[in-house]
Image (cartoon, rainbow, N blue to C red; front, side):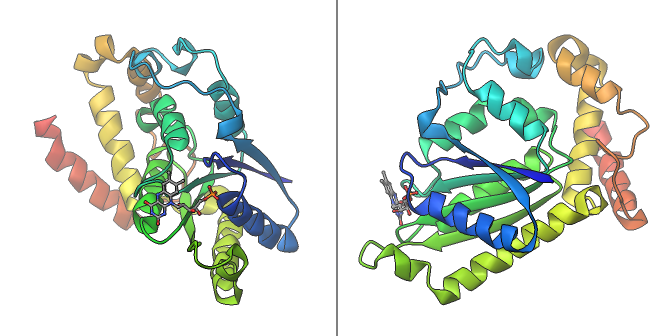
Length: 255
Ligand SMILES: Cc1cc2nc3c(=O)[nH]c(=O)nc-3n(C[C@H](O)[C@H](O)[C@H](O)COP(=O)(O)O)c2cc1C
């Protein structure tokens, strides 16, 4: 059975949780999938101290021993990841941002290339697009093979039920269906051109002699990928490989 890890970044168990549960129901109507929920507000997650040890030496060197480790483990063993946050003053919540900062090593060494992802957000009225676009960008940096977005406005003057009205739930069901199709495709889902370029650029930067001393974890990680097409098995068209090769060739003298 496929496994999905859903991170709820709201301090309350209301609109955002309800939206993710609606997505779960829409998915489970079609296929049995195991959902695990992590409520950040109920967990012990300290802010990043900025030591950079997760990046330079490895995630296991993070000096903070809290619940981020269990989320990191759940991510690496999941087929799908959901990051869900309400809009708080035009952005995601501080709880969600704290988690993202603590997992910043994933932006250097994307370990979630096997996963399909979903960005979820709710808002009173504004800021949805910005929050979803930020979450999507993070999931892409983490290497997720695909990212679907689902958002819902829950204006305070209306009851929440009307926000989950027929028209809206149609959109939510469509996004859930797309996420499920991506999960079923797994690593047969083609890699995006931007992800391939990200791979080539990071490999070029971190295999250079300059980075051996200052970024040993990145250096070791990317050295093992020399000669490989991508982080993991991936279908990549000749066109994408050609464009990525041109970008790499043009960028090389500047790095
Ligand atoms: C501190 C705070 C800041 C908020 N900022 C915004 C905002 O910038 N724009 C907006 O439209 N709604 C804003 N809202 C409303 C929430 O985004 C909205 O009610 C959301 O659905 C709450 O989700 P939840 O029930 O999962 O916590 C804010 C709410 C709070 C508590």
